[in-house]
Image (cartoon, rainbow, N blue to C red; front, side, top):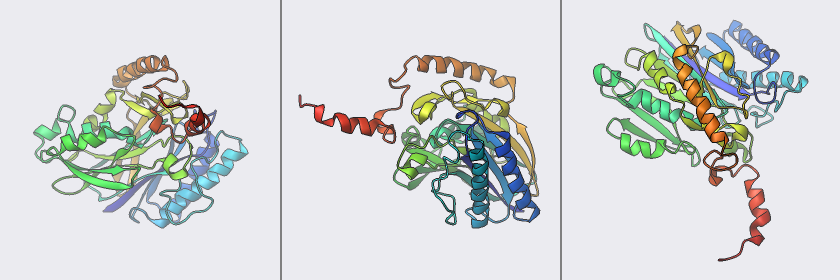
Amino acid sequence: MEITISVIKADIGGYVGHSSSHPDVVEKGRQKLISAQSEGLLTDHHVTVCGDDLQLIMTHQKGTDNEQIHKLAWDTFVECTAVAKSLKLHGAGQDLLSEAFSGNVRGMGPGIAEMQFSEREAETIIIFMADKTSSGAWNLPLYKMFADPFNTIGLVIASNMHSGFAFEVHDVKESKKIRFNAPEEIYDMLVYLGAPSRYAVKAVYHKESGEIAAVSSTEKLSLMAGRYVGKDDPVCVVRSQGKFPAVGEILEPFSFPHIVEGWMRGSHNGPLMPVACGQSNPCRFDGPPRVVAAGFQLANGKLVGPRDLFDDPAFDEARHQANILADFLRRMGPFEPHRLPLEEMEYTTMPEVARKLESRFEDI
């Protein structure tokens, strides 16, 4: 059975501040998707949140970039924004960069991760959702899942994974893409993956079969809006088991709270903390950045789940380490490397300050 899974998210308004999502907004989102499913547009759906982001998880048989699906998501966000504004929620509708839908939500503010595939006998899907960070946050975890044998032993001992995976990497500033084969090109690939503010893994493919293994959202709000509008809060969909990494191999990279950009005002580096869905309400300095993992089995396009995969004491140490790293970085205040480098601050007040002081600089 050919099925498409579309995960489309947007910041509809924060409750309170940027910390969480209001139940009325979530309920409006559910009502919209229930109606769409009853009309036959969707096979199934699940509505959830990560921090102040509304997450629409939809299965259907219309393929990726389908106008009807994208319009459904856009209309849902617009109606949810009306609820958010009536409640005077913070930053209501801040991810909606246009007044009207134009056929596709790409480039209009929301983040999108979609994949189409033929459903297997047992189809395991993990959906990662993050808050207070940006699209490059998935670079390190995806590399470890699909290219690092110290993380994923299946690359060594599973014959159907031993040939490796191909990575599609996007230059989000120049709107270009390149494909790398792992393991033979990992050194070249790491030159780019190590710069997540500009290069992001968009998709991963099984090298022998060509089947899609993972897809992420790579939209950067600041580039689309030309101004500071908050961080991008990305999503990522990963297929698991069989010829793909096992669930435990996919979750293992998050046992290390790696440093990502985002946090307060989208202008700081901080540890990515894996949490249960109920703990994805970042409050300390609007953070630290959070990631949740919702696991599903697909049955003829129906979403069986979710299982809250980070609701596990095995990740307590990662959370503990994230808090230690957060303490360490916060003590640096406005100094790098806690604050992002100047070239990543171009959509904040930094250019304005530079223009104001330009005439006071003298040649040495």
